[in-house]
Image (cartoon, rainbow, N blue to C red; front, top):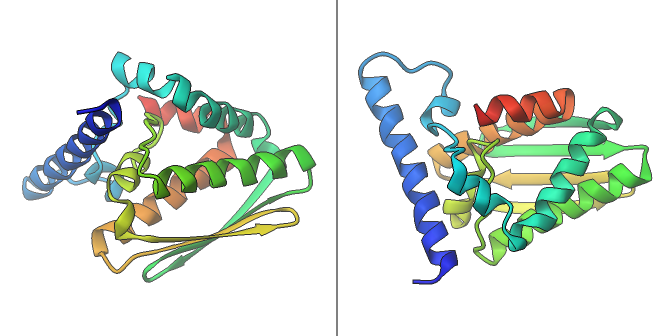
Length: 184
């Protein structure tokens, strides 16, 4: 088993554990804020941090961190659809535009190549990478950013897509504090 397969297995196990934990919480009447709880904790331990900063992941992490630095220059509008989302994320700053386009391109390319991305600040990303064939992605480059449409026919994946859209919107609005809360 190679590193990629081991990491994929670990992320899948974390996603499944989150769903099991949520089912137990729901059964005991303790389900709190929907999909965020269903996806469980982000598992931000030392091994997750090492994986996140591996040579293969440094580029996407740099792009993501740079986006946090320019978050105040980014605007985002999400339309929640019955089967997913349509999100338009734009900026008037050329550097922010380039970062937005690069980040989404990198993530979609990794999904297409089945190369997981350990990201402890997000509860939805591990689930999305564990099940990339359960949803469809469409990326349109705009002169001032990106337009993304993500849809699924799977009800649980639709909830994950919605949760991810809310996470990204918080990142855009709040920047680094929203990311740090996601890691705790």
